[in-house]
Structures are given as C-alpha cells and as structure tokens.
Amino acid sequence: MENMDDTSGSSFEDMGELHQRLREEEVDADAAAADEEDGEFLGMKGFKGQLSRQVADQMWQAGKRQASRAFSLYANIDILRPYFDVEPAQVRSRLLESMIPIKMVNFPQKIAGELYGPLMLVFTLVAILLHGMKTSDTIIREGTLMGTAIGTCFGYWLGVSSFIYFLAYLCNAQITMLQMLALLGYGLFGHCIVLFITYNIHLHALFYLFWLLVGGLSTLRMVAVLVSRTVGPTQRLLLCGTLASLHMLFLLYLHFAYHKVVEGILDTLEGPNIPPMQRVPRDIPAALPAAVLPAARLPTTVLNATAKALSVTLKSH
Image (cartoon, rainbow, N blue to C red; front, side, top):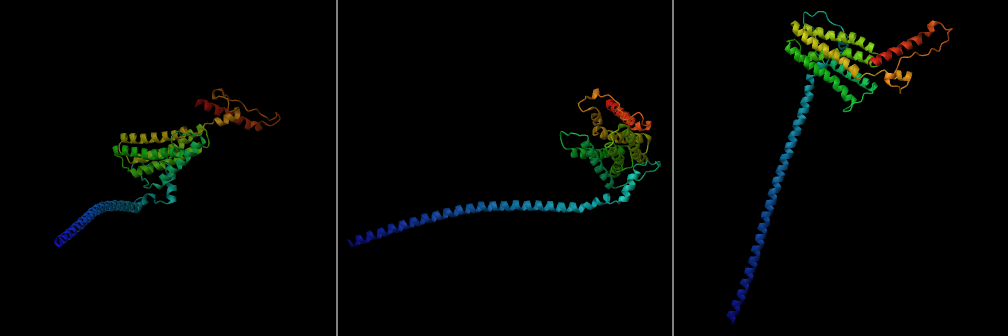
C-alpha cells in the first residue's frame, strides 16, 4: 500500500510537471510569434522610413538645384548689362538721328548696339496706343486693353525684326539681330510722334500729313541704313521695300484701328438721335448785328466751314 501511495504521488507530480511544461512551451511559442510579428512590423516601418528619407533627399537636391540656378541667372544678368548701359544724352541724339535720313550709302552705316532706347520707345508706344483705345471706347472681347496694346507693339517689334533679319540673311546683308532690333526700335519714334498728335487732334488730313512727313522720314532712315549694308539692286529692293511697306502700313493700322471718330462734334451740333445718313452740313446762325464790322463775323464763317468739312469727312468714311 505504501508503495502504491508513493507511486500514485509520483505520477501526480509527473502530470503536474508535464502540464506546466506544456504551458511554458505555449508561452514560448506565443512569445516567438509575437517577436516575429514585431520583426515584420519593424521591417515595414524601416522600409517606409528609408523611402521617406529618399524622397526628402530628392526634394532637397531639387530645391538646391533650383536655388543654384537662380543664383547663376542673377550672375548672368551682367551679360545683358552692355546692351542697356547707355547715357541719356546718347539716347536723345539717337532719337533725333532716327528722323534724319542719311545720304552716304556707299559704306555700311553704324547702328547702335543697345536696346535701352528701343525698349523704352516700345513701352511709350504701348502707352500711346492704350490712350487711343480708351479715348475711342475700344471693346476687347477676349483679353484686356493692356494685353492687346503690349501684344501689338512687342509683336510688331520682335516679329518684324526677326522677319527682316531673315530676309537680310537671304539677301546677304551685313546686319545682326541686335542691330535689327535697335534699328526698328528707334524707327518707332516717328510712330510715337504721329500717334500722340493724331489721337488728340482727330483730323485725317493732319494724320496723312504727319504720316508722310514724320513716318516717311523715320522709314527713309531705316531704308538708307539697310541700303548701305546690302549689295545688289535686287536685294536692296526686296529688303528695303518690305521694311518700308510694313513700317508705313503698321502706322496706318494703329491709327485707323484705334482712332476716335469725330461724331461727337456733330452730335453736339445736331443731336445724338439723328442717323448718320441724315446728317447734312448746316450754317451756324450768326448772332451779330448788321452794324458790326465784317471782320467780326470771321469766327462764325470758320465754324461753318469746319462743320461742313467734318461732315464730308465722316461721309467719306
């Protein structure tokens, strides 16, 4: 019996140890599984961290390249400085010279190699054209008045300069793109004078007079310079004829596209509700007595003639 009791006790102890050992193995297995999961999580987290570091490094390198490019561009501004380094007295003399045609065309004439004067003339033409648009009540359906004026003036300056330079290259003329920009830019000085006057004094006869005199002088100046730098009569005729035609027609376009019609004066004389076809010239009644000297009636006669001339001009258009 004692042996049986001892055996039964030892068997119970063995069962307890086995059960405890199984629990420890389960705990060890759970711990190993948890460690594996932590390892996988840490591995994914490490991959994401490495990816984020790479993206941040790429962004830093891109920003560094842009900053270095901006600094290099600022340093390259010195390249443009010679083209704008000019004294006001030189610009004034070149403006006056642009209205005086030259006679010596046997040797190449000197062309100013700067862009300050031409650029300022283009901006001046933009301001004058904008003034003409506003006074003529021009309506732009797509875009703005400022954008239209800038596009028109800069488009003509850059576009015609490039086109004439291409023709000069075909005609074997001795001129560079910079010289062509300067020549055409200073040639716009006559356009600025004509448009500034005719936008404020709306008389077509006055415009045609200034168009022939002022615009013609500036055009002849450019033509003479190109003739002195081109060899061959056919090449000279092609190059100079194209430049003269484009330059004079551009002035006509700027005037008739954005000029103020003189209907306001007739509206004040006859009323705004009368159709244009029914407007007839009429005399302004003289309020002076018969005893006054005939010289005193001179202003009334001038007003009558002016009203008739404006009416005929309006009907012709």
